Image (cartoon, rainbow, N blue to C red; front, side, top):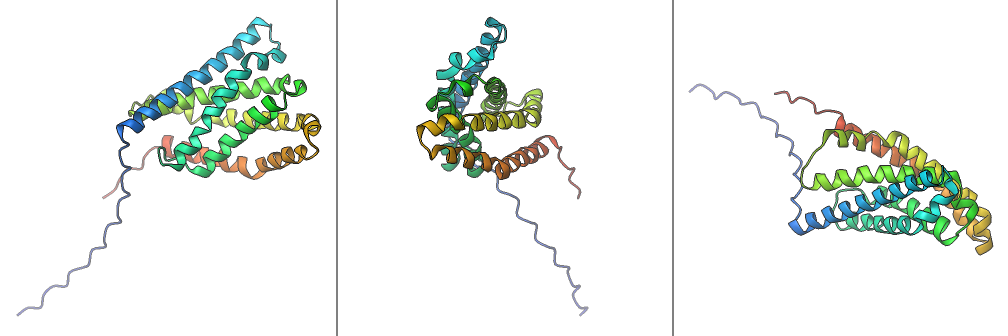
Length: 231
């Protein structure tokens, strides 16, 4: 008998990454409502900022007086995103989500609301920061709300993953200026409070590049185009 032909062992195909499990309907509805309300909240904050500037002929010192409560509320709701990431409602990394939320909550509550220092909240950097935050969040939350039900708008997607190039540095640098500006005011609360400011300021050095590069990678993944499969 002729010997059997040796058959070449075919390498096993790499296991395809498992598709994400479909979220339960109640989770989808909750996230849709959360994102829609957040979109509306930040949109209202942006509207109030613009209205104040128009009504006062560009007097930025009046902006915080007219957005104080609204900004505090919408920023508090943003803290829920850490919980969403922890319990798996969204695939966002817990670390990056915590870093993003913490810096804004710190500025909104501790630096602005609690310290209540006129020199800080009447700074032009407050207005610049809130405008940068608001545009970022209006776009982001609307994108997320539509994406839950797989509604994709190309222009919105492009804005979501492009505007951050300017808005993130503008927002972060404004945050740093306000944190630094408030040091004399927080020193009146406790002699140890300025150390908190300095620790948070120094944390921007390693963490901001991490968050910025994370967004660049996200943009490349979403807008970079898919490679054609070859047989």
